Image (cartoon, rainbow, N blue to C red; front, side):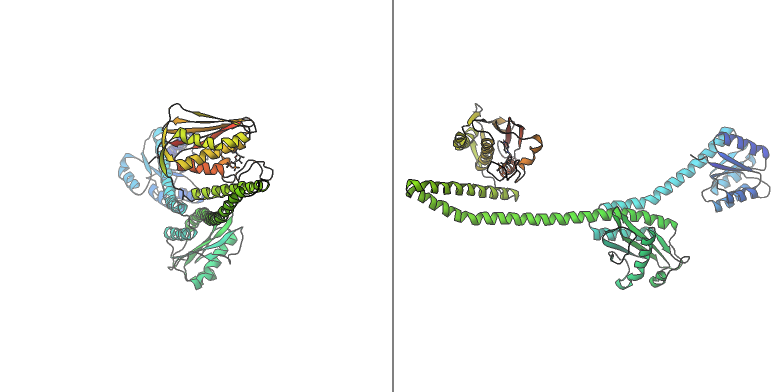
Length: 528
Ligand code: ADP
């Protein structure tokens, strides 16, 4: 840290020497002079942090020295030295804004303490001024960051700049998308003109263009005239680029209209920071709007897809039912060598119907159009029914299905059809993904305030990184072109949707090559 510079003024050489010794010993860079005129001259040539001056001096007294030195350096800290006889003057000195005074004769530590206190006061003064200046920026930033609509945000940026800089008129120009600078503003839109009419925008844009060209705020006024200033009938104008990470987003131009008023260095700095904040907020808002648009489009597409699925499935159902009806009649009428064909038609039509049912089920789950029909039932009974239904399928693959039910039956109030469909999906997957001759176990029983059902197979297993994904619709681990198994990848997403509709959870554990355990819970009765 650079040493603080102290200028000591006293007409007594002994005092000068003592001050020099004490303050240098404490780390200050000390300069001494023996009269007020010399001190003022030196203070106007060099920069000091603190003036330590005697009050009573021949020629120019200490208060005059302090006043003159402060006209050159307003931040100069002033400490006066005075004898008892001039106590009134010391009080007067404080009244005039002198930071500290010490009474002669003083101890070394008193001098050091007075100088340190005075410098600390100034530091605190500057700090609080800095914080006060930051406050409007902080407030503006809070407002910007909470706005996600570009048009509204643009209005807020203009309003904040006009309010804080006391401007009369303002225009914010924005490009459709960010440009790398330097760039021309012709394609920018005046998104938020404040007190400026459409046909007056030309000169405002040319000021903004200048700011773009220099990539820093520009001021035109009495000392720096421009054609635009005259056309705008303003006394001073300030333009600043609005930058974001991806490049320039546009520029902001402000005016003072009253004669004599002008934008200063502080205003330039303030606007530069404000435009920086505005740039980040505008970029975020633009991204947010793009996301919102993309989301709306996706939602629309999703809606159209759902509509298509449900219309197509409903329309196909009737001809399919007719087909199955007549195939069924034929199966019973035709000679045995033709009957096998009718059986094949019936089986495949049945598969087609099952697929359409899956699509419709998922569609209504996703649209929140599924209803729960509650009824009280025995857990053992409903699980037994499903296992019985699917046992022929397991038999056809020489698989053993073990059913393990808890000794005491559990009564449960839930949707029988949906509960059955969940277990059917899990058990048919277990059969499908277990090799011929393998074994499967189904377990069911009470668990906490509900029931827990487990389907354990000895099949191909699922890698842990797929444990979540297999519940997504249409997700299948095997490639659809090379896969050996039937299905569309909807069963598990339907099962998950239904478990959640019934108020439970579904999850799995698995080991590749060894098998999988799918588990789901359902509450004993629906949670209110
Ligand atoms: P589908 O069985 O119609 O393909 P699912 O949604 O029921 O659709 O299952 C999604 C995918 O999860 C299956 O294609 C399969 O890759 C995997 N999978 C499901 N159950 C098992 C299981 N018991 N063992 C191994 N893989 C399974």
